[in-house]
Length: 105
Image (tube, rainbow, N blue to C red):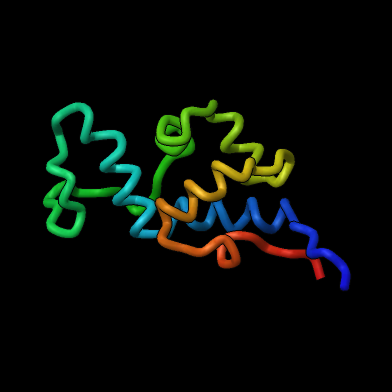
């Protein structure tokens, strides 16, 4: 049996799509960025803050503690996402690793 190979370009495209349309990711990024400022009660389901439809690369970079260029490189598939960061993506989005990664056929 051949090992699966990750298609980083397609995986990056999926990560960019999630940044624009995953409610769990938006809520968790919002919480991460606001909680330490005292602007968040931590109860995302009953949050009254108005959230944008998407998260900027800058906001996501702050949560992942990486540069905005790193997020850009992940989303373009030019740099693979590290295992720890992939697992953090899973935690923030509510998706499994299998749902997050795209494998070459």
